[in-house]
Length: 156
Image 1 (cartoon, helix red, strand yellow):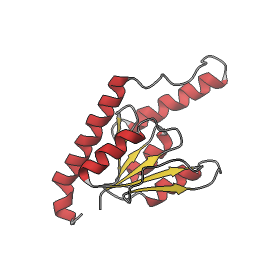
Image 2 (cartoon, one colour):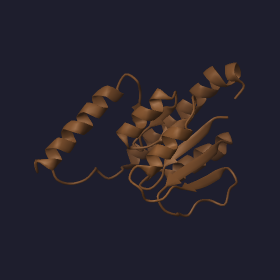
Image 3 (cartoon, rainbow, N blue to C red):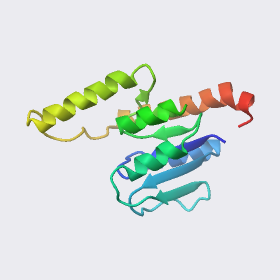
Image 4 (cartoon, rainbow, N blue to C red):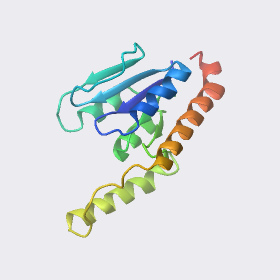
């Protein structure tokens, strides 16, 4: 069954995921290091994995299957999930794909090196209204694509 996994600790688009998942009657698993409030809905589950480094990422990568959807900003996690056949979307709506993940990992590593050397300060830009809109559009497109092209052939 088509399933959405959310790297939930710092995810700013959880409400959008709930809304789209409800419309398509999909299961959602939020994976986090600590408890958080979730909707009172049987289709939404919270998996608390503890606070070990990368515990949430490891759990998602181990439990993701082909045609699942993963929502994350974590580029290494995106790469791991792509290798398992999942579709991966950033919280700004940018799809991670086999074609762009190599460049995205390289850029991430370069930016990390620059931050470590003191060249760059500050965090990520705030999520804008257009980012949320792009995220919703991308999530909807991915769900429709999977349903149209893979659900019938695999019996999902």
